[in-house]
Length: 576
Image (tube, rainbow, N blue to C red):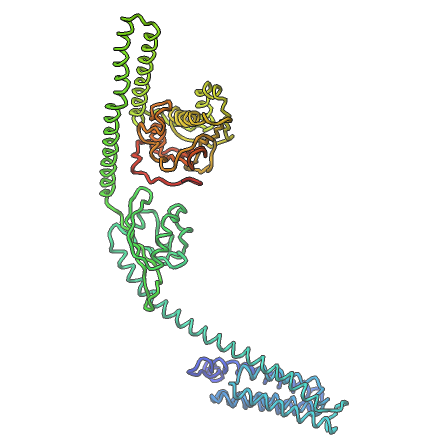
């Protein structure tokens, strides 16, 4: 019963949402005004003030009629009646008060603001015009002394008030229309969001059914902020994740940064409209990823879907097969090169020895002691050359098979060992050696790494002969936690950029007249490769010096022989 009675006094609802809002506002204002009118009438009656009491009761009656009109769904008439009451009350107070100069004149501004919220444009203009006419009448009454105002009214007073109230009306209407427009946009957006949410729920259900029935796979959907919109599939749990751990979170919040950086570019490519496949490892598994842009009805890419499929031990076997084939091809290439060297470089000292043995026999018969000594020196030099070649070839063949136990060692200690082995040559050539302090600790075979630095510094010494002040610098350019990059720099004759790769080849000597066998840099590269690093050279050619950059592991990594041809040569900072 009580609920039924209360429902009778609820503001009416209209088909139009805006009208319903205005009705609710009007209902609140009428109830407040009615309570104020009745309360003020009671107080004035108690104080024995009959005229204000009658006026307030009459006003309350008008407000009550407006309330009844509202319940009868006569919204426009109810609003006009309420605002008309306000205008009439304000005018009455002006007449019995100080006319246009009375403080109650400011109530017109309140009426204008209320009208801007409740009336349409036409009715609002009519209300403002009515207020200006009423004020004109009040100013006229004040001019002729028909009010209790101590001021003499004049047309300028009306103009001032009309200007102020006109500006107030203009501003209030602008704000009101802006508010109406914002509400309309908000309603449109709310409806659009509801529609999108419903469509998304249907789409999500479809994708979840699809994901749950794809063996060894996971389905991931991202929005343009790289946020996981959906994550599902049996393979998800195999990687230690669940949909609750991923959905709603950003890519870099949910998965390791290194892997996120690896796949970010692919996801953004899918969000730009590209559809493609790629393979990438995750922990101990290899996955094939299908990147698919999800396009809405307007042709815009709404989301990016990533279908991750675990590729079944077979990929590992294929990779191992390809690695073995590549290694075999590399070995065959080296064997072919070695065969050529054995038939050329190793034959050269033998030819020299054979030739000078004939000279030696002749010179002994002739008793030419000076020539005999010269023949012996030539034969000894050829023997030493062959010995160096055989030694370097044997050393090269051992790299990758004979390994000392790897351990952590400060790189400064490796440099110190290498420089001690070269101390005599450094002193002889008066070379200035500069070594950076506190270089990182590396992980590997100490003796092999000493050999790397020794060969690189020895190589620098060879090509500083034309310098008045030979200078070699050893340092680090990036102290990465995984692979710091070191360098050996000289101010020697430099290396033409077209030979930057050739110098690491077996027996490749750019200057055949220099000492050495041409195997030193090949050994260096093989040692670096075995440790999982890489090496490259930066030089701009004649007279510019050369800098050899190389990376080494700072933590344990599998030490295995790696084919250089299978590595992707990357340029270093400032490298050619």
